[in-house]
Length: 84
Image (cartoon, rainbow, N blue to C red; front, side, top):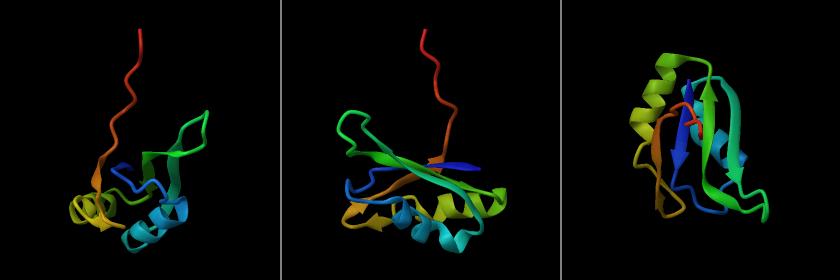
């Protein structure tokens, strides 16, 4: 399951996300989304967990979690909307 993690502190790294989700099973991938021009974090990222049930548990437990003074928004990632 691919999980959206929003309201990330701008200094949060992929290692921070890996650490945060490590207790919920094998992590397939982690990405902190950055601005392509500045390279600065855009304040959100994605974590993909191999186990669907554990991913659901992660969403339930980490939504609203405080990371460096910011309350995270954690939910199942939705497919990217296509532009016309």
